[in-house]
Amino acid sequence: MKRFWAIFKKELRQIGRDPLSLGVLVLIPALLLVMYGYALSFDVKHIRVAVLDESRTPESRRLLDALFGNPYFEAAGTLARRAEADGLLAGGRARAVLIIPQDYAGNLARGAVARVQVLVDGADGNTAATTVGYFEAMADRVTRQARQDVLQRAGRPAALPLVTLEPRVWFNPELESARFLVPGLIGMLMMLSAVIATSLSIVREKERETIEQLLVSPLRPEELVLGKTLPYVMIGLLTMALILFLGWVLFGIVVRGSWLILGVGTLLFLFAALGMGVMISAVTRSQLMAFQLALIGSLLPSIILSGLIFPIKNMPLVLQWISYLVVPRHFVAVLRGVILKDAPLSALWPSLAALLALGLLFNLIAAHKMKKEL
Image (cartoon, rainbow, N blue to C red; front, top):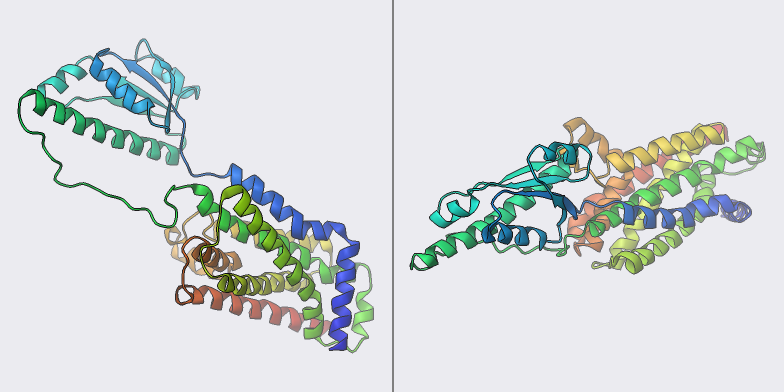
């Protein structure tokens, strides 16, 4: 026990003398959360729409009022002829062009199909698909209103829709992408800082040639790994508290679920992430190599295979199996379950068990490697 505390206190002093490592663990994740939280967004708003109104009737103006009375659209100008649409879309001055034909009002008056055309910039497929969906929803509302007007002019009772949809959105009623992204960003940023910081801990001893002092000491491998890891667990918990505070202040992210489950999940995550960093540190001989392996092993999998942005179920089966080895995948599931959904332990225990298993795997590999050297 005395040997462990000696390593523990030595590592704390080392961290205090190295403000760069402390900054990587505490300040960098907080700054990146602010930057990514505001920069990343799945919300498609303020779509610039140009209009060619060949009808120029009260009915067409009513359609345009319905369009630009919606916060998702904003006017990008009017066209005099159809040939101008290509230049607007190609130059990026408009995302869509709405063309209202001359017979629009006449078809509405007769109760016939009134066709309008929308030209959409499809360079960004996701934005284009969302834009088309917005236009279809708007056309459905205008169609219902026009049908009611025709029936009323004919002296017939207004027709009621056969099916009405009454959506109720749970967990994120405002459909704000920040509420979905911020918990995932917490997992990614914590993973990045924890793995990079700890991956440099043991290899730093090798570069400074102080590892020989440890080799001749009566240290056991598990004491060395635990002594090198525990200080970063404490700093990681402090970082987590700071990030949750910033998420609440800046993005209104409130922890809806159990703080106990969140705390246990954070400890298991740090156990796995720091174990991965120590494992990298144990198998490398230079800080540069350790940094590169830590960056490759934490950043790219955290973005691609954690479910932060891309749904895992949409990936090929091979990648889905590989993603089980990605620590942030399980931590992001815990964060979103606790913070957004108030999920019970019965729904989160598979992710917690996976974090524990990965932590044991990485730390056992690190201890085995250190045993060979000690």
